[in-house]
Length: 153
Image 1 (cartoon, rainbow, N blue to C red):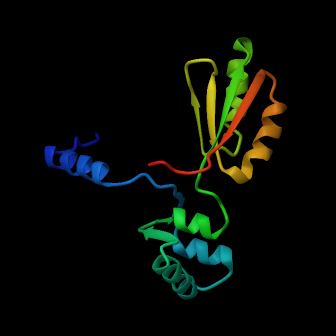
Image 2: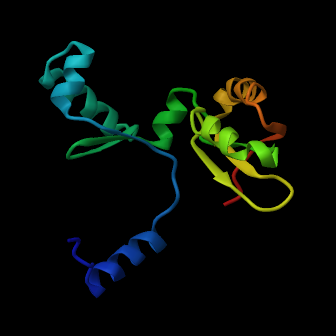
């Protein structure tokens, strides 16, 4: 049975949320031994590289996870500014179309209300790939893509 958070814990969580800022990260849940083995290097060598990347603020690490930060994404040439794809879906094909959309390399996908049925948030570098795959999904009637050009807030 899950323990309910205390009032102080909720207060702390709210403060962290309010004082924090939204950033784009990629999180990898992995043990360092496993990662070192995949790279074909020793755990000690891995730690040297991780420390350098952490000092440069390209990653954040903790017990059992590594986050690639927005700064790290930018260093790799991956835009942290999202691209939005709005999708119109045939009402009779929604279930099928949404199952196929789940397989795409989108960062997030939402069902929405209004003139369109769903919105995908994708990396700018993946836009062409995602649009090609969307065009082959039965039930996708229309797509509109919007590429962000800057951050306001």
